Length: 117
Length: 111
Image (cartoon, rainbow over all chains, first blue to last red; front, side, top):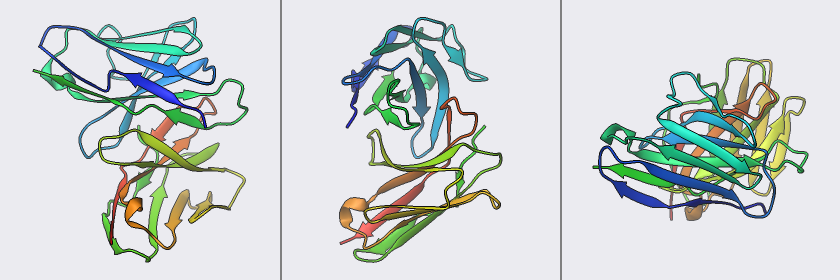
């Protein structure tokens, strides 16, 4: 089956620093990837849609200058949390849809646990 | 806004029993998907049911969709301890693959 990886799996950073999270589709191409965040014992909240070669589309209430998304290739999207604060601590999950798959199925990465101290 | 909304219940069942979860949503959809998430891990896609389908099976999973009631159910038959996880439904309403996730159901299967 299709595999999506995320790196790093866990990261701890200090307030005010920036953190970059990578999302890769390993065996398929993805023109569209999605970024979610999940708080403990809660559901996933869609943050933005990452489009290869163009600007990301952010959901209402998500600060695009704080959560920078770059989708520079058909297999890689990055999310950079800039000037991180403790309230940004969360579980960040990406997903990707196989561009050539002809289905609606999305494949999810294993998630990145971000802790801001 | 969240479309899929499961009944906010946590299930605790004995191994071998069946587990049923429900999901309701508010607007028209293209498809509805069920996912499983083990604690602190990513999501695993279980099954997708299109808006023109009423029932779908995959192994021990059975999903129903009632578009008139805007609801879906997920049945896990003959549950196993390994089925212990959170289960989410997600709706794709706009055809652009933006998924709206529900709150999730915590299922604990006791060996």
